Image (cartoon, rainbow, N blue to C red; front, side):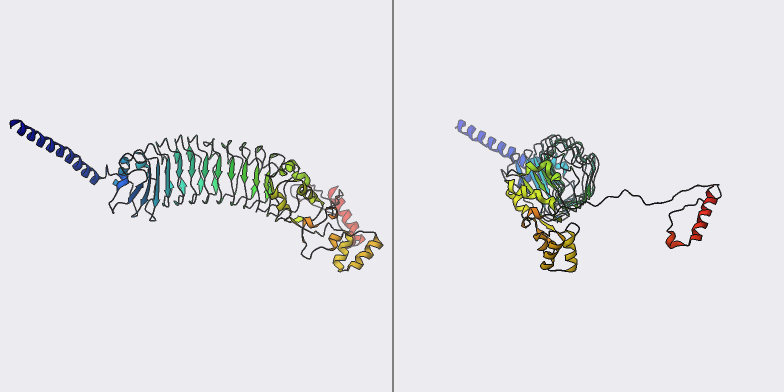
Length: 495
């Protein structure tokens, strides 16, 4: 009996002790949740909370690896208690913030990110972050990708992305960034891709990329850049692709891309380029693709492609080019024959002359369907300066084919049928013209005779102004007496 009572007594003590052990942590948990310290960020049920996160892998504390959070109820302060709750999931590797209300998040939450030392991917979207502050991602040594798209960012402070040894991708698309400073990117040795598409960048500081020496792709598409120089891309010796489409670049000076020794793809479409230096692409020995379409080029300098002999994809369509000769294209002509090559020339203002004959040869020899299709669309315009004088006279007088025949018989001048049948608009498809009938432009005669000008100045004292005489047309300006008087006056002053 005594033994049975002792057993019951011992059991009651154990049950009471167990209840006490569970009650104390529960009370502590309630106290800590009230203060916002240990609330599980993956299990927030409070409707008043400004941040709600969904964790894909698990909702248990310290087990989640991926979380997607929504930010509500605008104006979340930097010291809001909810931020401390991110300490409940220190193993997170991927974290996204989708801001649902305008103005709900106007900064990068640097402090809560400090709890997430294993974080590899951070994505913030639709905030109104005016600027990315210095060391915004401090101590995230495992971070590989930072995406801050559509956040109304205007400025990147010095060292905004600094001391991030594993960072490989930065995406800053669809913001309002105005400028790229010198030390924005510092100590990011593995950065390979940097995207600024759809911003308002108009100025890039010299040396802005000097610390991104392993960058492979730089996207500056759809900005407001108007000028580049030889120091703009310092430090990008390993860059493979540079996208500068849809900016306001108006010229390319010599050595603009000289530092980009390994560049393979250069995109310059939809700019305002009117002038390209003959040495603009010097140093780009690895370049394979170049797009200059939809610009304002009226001509290209001789030897422009001499420094990019590996070029096999070239787009010069939709410019104002009036000629492109065999000598211009010769350095890369053989590269345009394989099936994976491409040459785009349609949409220009070529003159119908013999400088286009190389196009017929390339059409027959290339295996590239893209090149063939483009060449078949190339048009040219008849230029009155290069057609025969007989045709010019007939064109001015509006004479018929009978008159043309008479001129051919009487004057011995052969007028090409292609010229006779010229369309009223003057625009013709190149490959509907026989190459033998294309006229060659006649070079303008050069004169070395200089006009006679007397421009002799001889001051005779400090109070007398120098006299300047030039040739006088005496037949129209005066009589012989006036000529003699002028000569005597000249001798009087200069003897």
